[in-house]
Length: 200
Image (cartoon, rainbow, N blue to C red; front, side, top):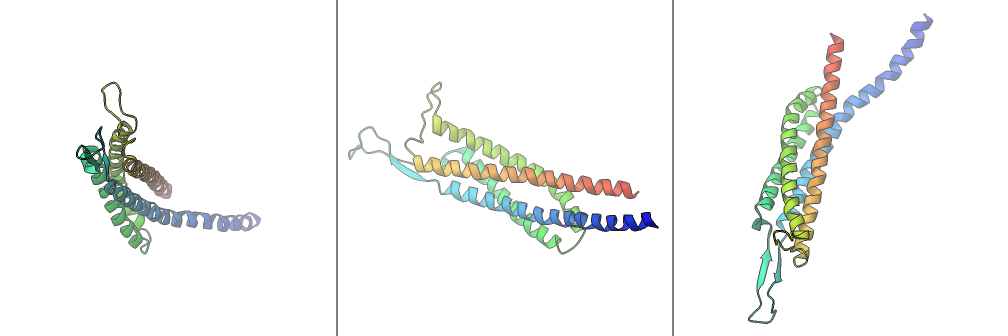
């Protein structure tokens, strides 16, 4: 009798944390997916507004003035970056809405995660590749390469380079959020599998 009375409060004490943990993951999943959408949107907007015109001639006196405009679409790497982050933003928006709807149906969120995690990994690879490609071009623009005579341009197009750098920084943040989202999804699925095995 004493042992049964002693263990009853322990079971009641162990119940709430498990319930809180079970409910907290779907909410965290929605928040992280919204951050993926927000980071993708901001990165694209900052990149596509990166336009600057400067005088690049040796003699800045009319009619010898030569003006050149730097735009993101002058680089294939930046175009790929915009395309990849647009996909990431759209994916983040769709999955956020679906996850919000799943909160109303207990038990359906785990099924969604098992499908989402495949696309999450694929999207992380795409975003990471786009960020790396854009970062490589941005580094050349910032530092140049004296060995192959590639001149830096950020000393001329300062605002343009600031936009590029800001967009890449936001994309890096989005990549970290995606990686965290994948880790949490794997952890949630592994716990569900363990509970299923213990029940059998």
